[in-house]
Every structure is written in structure tokens, then in C-alpha cells.
Length: 162
Image (cartoon, rainbow, N blue to C red; front, side, top):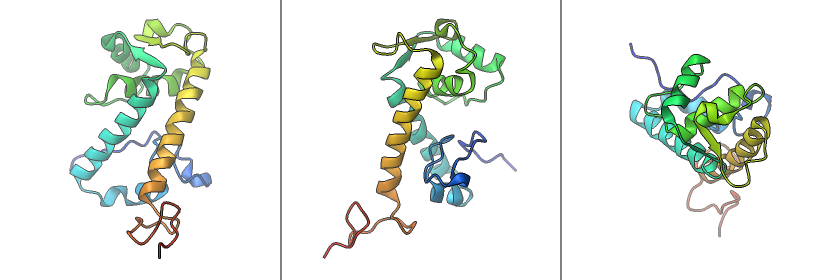
């Protein structure tokens, strides 16, 4: 039996009441339904999560050396996937190492304009805050307040349109 692909990083904040997990950016219903998704659905969702992280991280950093980044992730035993984008990998590195990293360039990462003066912990905080905002918007568009996909009779707030 093959291992089921999951974005879980072991810090699920939905257990403490968040609608969107701070660790993997999936919404609570999606986490519950994950093992019911087929392989193609999980793969597609992983691509979407990587794109979200890459889009937001790209506003703050760029990866100037993908090999150095992969080497550091491996060295520090930070899990990543071969098909994961470099910017999504950079988010994982910052998530795990943000309090210990001193020189981002040694990890193949360079801050963009607006991020040059930030310490790695501050940089991760800004990136993660923006990721959570975008993930919450997505969750609100996909799941109604009752936990079901919105239908054509509901507006964006989940209220009936008449």
C-alpha cells in the first residue's frame, strides 16, 4: 500500500478552533475529508497549496540557489517533496528554522524589496500572515458556514439569495 500524500506538518491549529490550519493552510472540512479524496484530488490540492505559498513568498523572497535550499532542507531533516516548488520549500525552511537562521543567503534565499531589513522570524511572520489571509479567503469561497460547499442560492456570506 502506498503512503497517502498530505500537506500536514504536525501543527494542526484546527484542533484549537481555527477554521484554517496554520500549519498546512487547509480548511477544517478539507482536513476531515482528505482521506476520502482520490489520489488525483490530493495531488491537485497539494499543487494549489504550493502555488499559494509560492505566490505569497514570492512577494518577500526569491530562491537564488535551489540546490543550496534542498541541501539545507535535507541537512536539517525538513520534509519536502521533489515536485514542491522552491518558494514553497523556502516557506517550510523559514517555518522550521526561523529562530535559528542568521544568513538566508547560505540557504539559497534572498529577501526582496521590503524584506531585506527583516530577521528570518519576522520575514516568516509576514509571509505566514499573508498566506493565512489568502487561505481563509479560499476557505470562505469553498465552504459555507454550515460546512458545505456554497450553492447558487447563497451569496458570498452564505446567506440565501432570493
